[in-house]
Length: 250
Image (cartoon, rainbow, N blue to C red):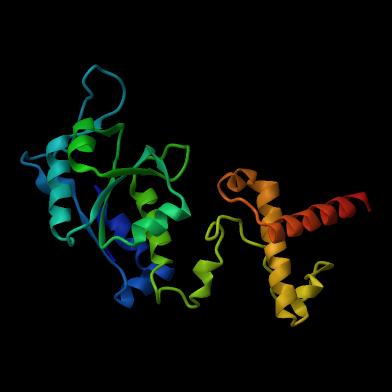
C-alpha cells in the first residue's frame, strides 16, 4: 500500500516509521509512506502557509494555495483510484470497518491539518473524505494520520508476526477482545483461568468467545446495535452474566 502524508512536520511521520509493525511493513515492501510539505509550495520568503481567519477570531487558518498544491503533488505520486483523506475532528468516526475499507484502496493521501483549521475551499476542492479518531481536539493531524497508518499496516498480509493477530483484535468482528494471560500461572496470588492451561482448544475457544461477548456487553453495549446475536452467542452471554452475578454474591 502506498500512502502520502501532507504535513508541515514530515520528520514526525518519518520517525514513527522506524518502529514496530510500521517499520516491519516498510522493510518488507508492504507499505510505502512519503510526505509532502505545503511550505514547498509557497512563493514568499517566509514560506507562509497560514493567515488570519476572515471574520476575525483566534488562531490561524491554513491557506488554500500551498495546501491544495501539496495535496495534488502527493496525489500524482500515487496510483489511480487513490483517495484523499483529511484528518479532522469533524470527520466520520474511524472504525475497524472503515480501516478495512481504506486498506483495500491502492493508495491514500492523508492531509494533516494544523492551527485553527483548513480553509473550507480545500475541503471542497481537494478532499474526498474526512476522518476523526475521536471526539477530542489535538494540535494537528499528524498523530491521527499515524494512528490510521498503523491500523492499516496491521491488515497488510505479512506485516504481523502471526496473521491471526489482526483477525483476533478488538473490533475485528465487532466485539471487544477477550482477556489475555501469560506465564507465570500464578502472580500476586491471582491464577490464570484453568481453562487456558487445560490444552482443550475447543473449551478455550468457547471461553474466549464468552469473555469477548461479556466484555462488550459491560464496556461497549452500543456495539451490539449493529451486531445481532445468534442463539449460541446469546447463550454464552447469558452464561457470562450469570457467572458475573454469582461471583459478585460470594
